[in-house]
Image (cartoon, rainbow, N blue to C red; front, side):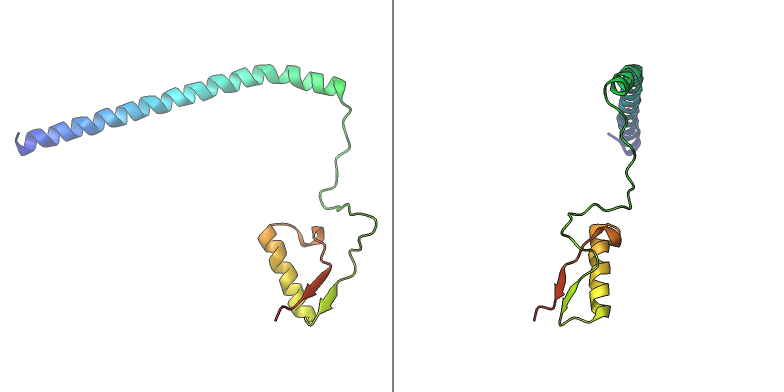
Length: 113
């Protein structure tokens, strides 16, 4: 086999692989579209049943935190920690948890030596 024949054979091989991958992508898109249409056709019936059976609950405020009655959001015990360090620790914890700081409750912060 010459160099030219091997190059032509490799180009044809790549073409076949890319063609099959393209057909597979089209098949997946067609299946997704068909399933989406089927889901949309069934969705109104489900929504009507839900509206008839269950009353709509009022929307909750995402910024409001409901805590037990014995929990206080205003007190924090600091043991050998400055206010600045405590604020930094609370900010780091809120960042790592990806939660707003006002939704977290800290009871005490203590330096471990």
